[in-house]
Image (cartoon, rainbow, N blue to C red):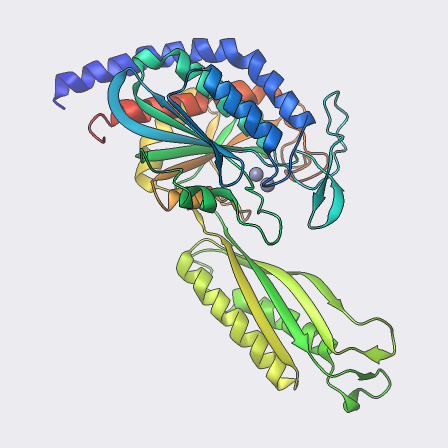
Length: 429
Ligand SMILES: [Zn+2]
Ligand SMILES: [Zn+2]
């Protein structure tokens, strides 16, 4: 592309930008309506049947060129081909809710229940994925209405089971990738957003590089030998061994990891063992989580946790069996893409309302998409004016509250990111 062509293309992009804002304002009421509907009817991971049907019906009604359903169980992938030649960009929203009983007083509060790993539970969009679904449905409507001016194609990815599928099931972004969500056509970039209580309504947070942690599940089984609580020398005490393991694991991050490089977390969140005060049991089971921001450090910590727990077990004449299940990789925002798109984030959010935010030790399976194509994942504040974002009920709380005034910013954000990226990559077909 020569210089005059580039300037024509950029002028067209800025005209398109103004139209996006008009169309986004026109769709805002519908987006709020969809969000309330999805909020009132939350569905757990791999069970997003109603939500997926709503999405698929909407995309078909908009006349998208392709709408694939049943991707990774309940996922929906839509493709909108623009009227002008250009590359392909992808936008992603997750659709699943959490096993949380809603405590927010809203006319459309969830009364739903579901089954989670065999237990009946309340179900709530406590992570705000209802907002993500509604926002992306709105973006699809905005861009479908402007398709003649669109310089390329947009892939809409509605993903199930971001919060991990139920035990024993596959699902989520990893499975969507395996089932070809990023093929035919392969996008040149992918964008996603997450609503957060940690920022005020409409404020956009982002960072380059490692942004959200890897997340892995740790399980340690300590085998001892049961005996009378009054005569511990006649057996092997797995409870004392477990206690040593818990304390020993605290040294993995604090004493052996170079914390000037990246932070990391090793947490034991559950310990189960024993039935009464005067019996030393045979067995203790511990469960925990490991978070890192660097794949090499991730492997290193896994190795250290395993060898340390096994060695403590040997030293106590017990046996520690360590099992670490890798869940989500580090969410890494592509530095070049982040730098290129930062002006869009600032322009859409408005002066002083887009900012670089600290790393988050939570995790996101958006990382699986980023392993295939460069991706940028940003945060959108939903804590209303008058509330302190530092103390507002966080995502996953039964009192998590999303201010719907942020949704319009969400629609504009993803629509502008897609169009600006398409306009800037005319040859990347
Ligand atoms: Zn979540
Ligand atoms: Zn989430």
